[in-house]
Image 1 (cartoon, rainbow, N blue to C red):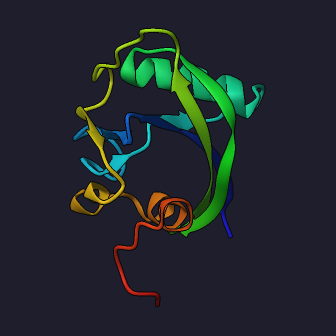
Image 2 (tube, rainbow, N blue to C red):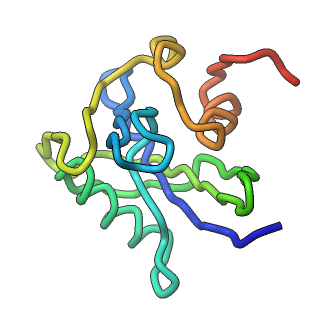
Length: 136
């Protein structure tokens, strides 16, 4: 087993839709979709990392409401520990694609039209009942 990367992501819901962001072409796992967020630095809390990463990616402040779920996924040579947080946009913040390729507001059923990284997909299965692949 390699090293563990702690990653946090924001599940931002508004009017029955969830905000998802598309990874840049140059990113690891390019052009896949995910809940906005990123890596936790060694000296910061999950919540601080989440607020910082979300602002950097979608140029909007969020209020963190609590942990929705977590999942550890083994990739080749490392593992990702992903924690999903329920968040709301702060005030009248309107997100934009700041350092991501694109953003969309989608319903949980529309999420099956978008390709997510494996770590996100398994967490979404648990959280939202979004099933994409048969159980292995």
